[in-house]
Length: 537
Image 1 (cartoon, rainbow, N blue to C red):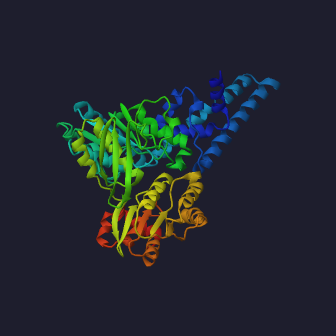
Image 2: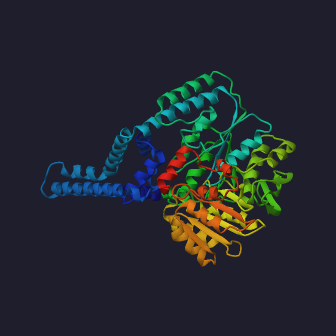
Image 3: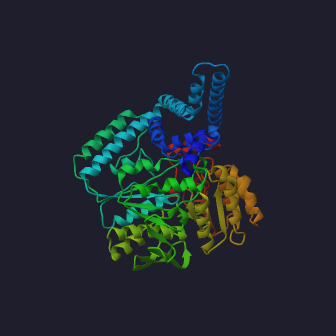
């Protein structure tokens, strides 16, 4: 009875518009939305989707539902006091049916919107065809898929796993971050993504894939990254049926879309629905989300199935790691820095161990792992300085992890170039203040911020913590300021999100060798045009 009452309140209460939009976001398309609406057994379990961009939609749906209820009451009144034939029954039907009516109105609006956006339905058609090709590839060939999901460190973890396994297996993976519904199938077929409207290029890819389906698959293992920036996207990867899944953590990400950590967890933990075995970073995944789930754990704590300890000093060249791989010990010097680097290396070791790689090969492969572009990559800076380039992206957890690495390194003055963190929604103000407070005046000579939110929230908190702070909106100006105040042997951390920040451009100014700019993220013509447009260079 409680469940029934909750469902009735959810279906007819003021949260109904937000729940309908939440259901649409989970499904991602008009027809799948309608199918889920009719098959949803408990409407109270549908997440509410409150977002400022939908304010007018909420108001329209709310006003429409209220008008329908008022109209129903008027009909009941007419039937009761003016003896209008059938008015009472019609009025009750109008009131009772308003969730149904507005669900179908939302469906029709979404359908029309989709028709008016050919890029969206063109992409949907491509996804369906590519997914069918992947299913056929899986049916015809025997190979293992390792799928990496999580809120932080997915690309680095994917590459570490793939490169470690490649020491003894034939491994298919992609160096970049192909991680959405359209690009993941391309990874399996070793195809590059063309422009969405380049019909000829897409036809060539589909024909190329068709030819490959006639041949034996030349790989033993495929390692893919599963990304999401909104509810309902992770379930679309179920067709892959991965043998192994890796959950790198559940932390704040794309909070403008998810709203809270519970919704992030619900999305990321979808991999449990279709992976045979899941390896979970329990250090960065709150325990409450793992209750009653069966998984293999990895952590820096000894209690995990796979654990790692950082022993000795952390230097720019690496750190000594001691691992327990389900009872087997392994000690070596890893080149991925800090606790985050240790956990990424451990994930690679754990997956390789599960897949039967022997310790000798494993140690050699793990020792050879190098940081990738924009993920704590070490570069030579001007005036004999060291740059830690961690500019690919930024979230509160990742920024703290990067600062922890900077704090541990011995040498000259430490400088933190911290860009704003995008897509944090309502948590943005608090998150930027949190990072500002995390800046340690005893360990940082200078904090330089990039972007409006970093200037507004992070910088004042860092000043309050005792740090010397300078703020800029333009990353090149930030880099020039640091360069003008640079002392020999300084250690510089660059960290930030993409749009409106692009902290890699501050790092570029500080490079000892301008040719090393090729090692930075987002240096293609496409990205440079975006930067020129945003900053007016």
